[in-house]
Image 1 (tube, rainbow, N blue to C red):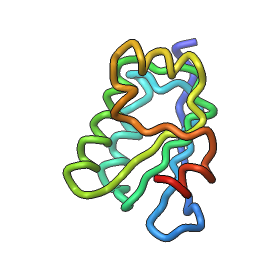
Image 2: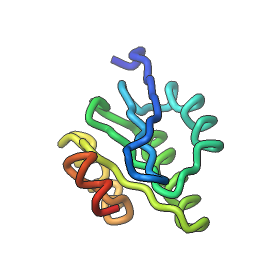
Image 3: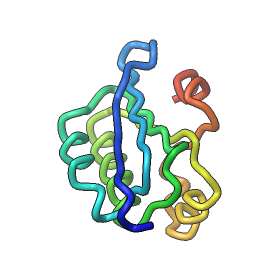
Image 4: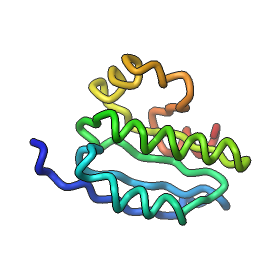
Length: 114
């Protein structure tokens, strides 16, 4: 389970300034380094992370999301999560960060309300 790769791709959402970052695979420590590098340069006004194909994450994965959230807030940008499964949602609740990260069921809803 721990050797599964994380892939990601970003695309425009159809609304100016909104970028969708699709993550596929576990968001865990061995997989986060290239994503962190990408996120240092990819700073749109609104970043939507699609986690629908992220089966699980660990504290390092949460750290990536929280670090991006903090950077976005400091620089008048926003972020949202979509497609959060029960396992990932339970981890966000357990670590008490669910209130910081805005979640939406679909990309379309995130684009409309983020």
